[in-house]
Structures are given as C-alpha cells and as structure tokens.
Amino acid sequence: MKRIAIINGPNLNLLGSREPEVYGNQSLKELEAKWVAFGQVKGVEVTCFQSNVEGELINAIQAHGFDADAILINPGGYTHTSVAIRDAVAAVEAPVYEVHISHPEAREDFRKTSLIREVCAGSVSGLGVRGYMSVLDALLNVRL
Picture 1 (cartoon, rainbow, N blue to C red):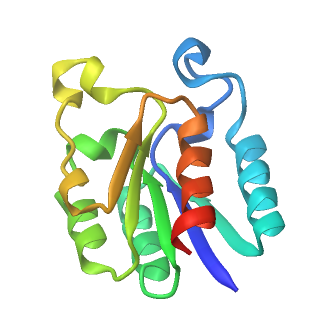
Picture 2: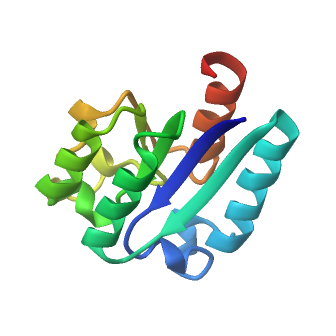
C-alpha cells in the first residue's frame, strides 16, 4: 500500500476558529478525516500529524521521510525561520510538497521568503484548505 504523510506546523490546530476569513471554518480534525477517507478510497494510507513544536515536526519528517511515498507539509510560521526543518526536508528520500492555506507572498514582507521551498518537490499556496486536496489528488492520480 502507498503511504502519504501530512504534517502541519504551529497554530494549524486552531483551524476553524483562527481567522476564519483567511483559514476557513473547518477544524483540522475535520480536514484530517477527509484526507484519510480520500486516501482510503484510492487505496493509499494517509497519516496526519500536527505540532506547534519545531523539533517534533523534524522528528515527523524523519519518521516518514524514508518510508512514505510523499509528504505534504505546512510548516506554518516555521516556513520563514527554520533552517532545521529545511535541512530535515532536504535529508529525506520522500518527495516533500509545501502547502499553505493563505498566499504568504501576498502577506507581510517577512512571509515572502520560504526557507524550505527550494528543497521541496512542489509548492501550493493561496487555495485555502483545498490546496491540500489539490496536492493529494494530484499525487494519488498521477504520481503514485
């Protein structure tokens, strides 16, 4: 069976209540259930992980990066600050896809730089929570 890991960083546990005009009204748990169910329909195991802690995100990247077929990651604010997450993404064998709900380049200046994008296989931003499903659908229908 194919495996895809979805890793979410800081503050994504607040989806559904945090700035719904930017991030939508669905909770992370609701979204995770949809992603897992979509994977089941396609015969792919989708696992989900969220943490507000940088080291736990790195551990998750390393834990999945050598046996998953792909990783989707939304590093949240660590996108702009974490060399350590960048290094973890660069070190693993699985292709990693960066996903952002908002479009960081259209926001504050400090959000315009992604430290991890250049070591990722692809990136999607600005599609709301649909961005996750866009990448997941593409991987399940084209790449895997």
